[in-house]
Image (tube, rainbow, N blue to C red; front, side, top):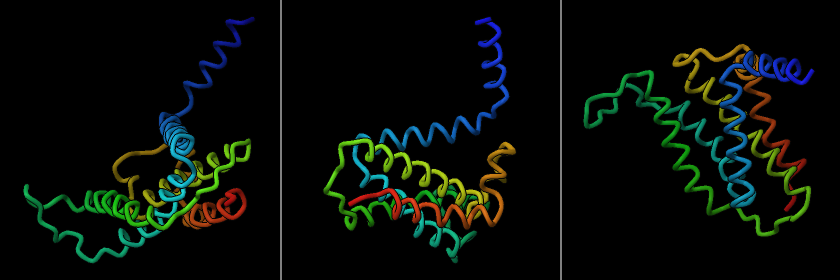
Amino acid sequence: MFSETTGSVVSSLSNISADIFGVLGVIILLVALGLTYGKKTLLVVLLSLYPTALVTHFFPFYGGIPFVTGTIPLKFEPLMLFILALVGSIFTIKNYIDTSYQIHSFWRFVEIISLSVTASGLGIALLYHIVEIDNFYNFSTILNSLFESSTALWLWLIAPLASISLFVRR
């Protein structure tokens, strides 16, 4: 009986795509980051995604930036700009977010989990639509259904703001 149940669980887990485990890993990493450094760090990462998306989408110099080794292929430029803009946004926004009051209860876990899920979801949705990361890798059907449509992008743009207003307490 035990071996049948174990075999059933193992076969179910083997049918799940590695992409799902990657997304869950990112969420777990953000939860650990939030538990270690507080919700300020997660808020900074989450709010930094919005200006990063604008900079990456409306950047006027794609294809014309020379580097030391020559020019980067055109399909990698949005990804590199996204990463650089995210780092720059994080360093800029971190000075303006203040969350001095920390709740030491169950509510803290709700805040951190909601911020982690929405930050990772928004980041993946922006990578799908602005960087077009699906040109580099064929993602699973589950991730495509969650992030590929324009309606999904709109919902992932709204979800973090709703999460902050509903779950995050000062």
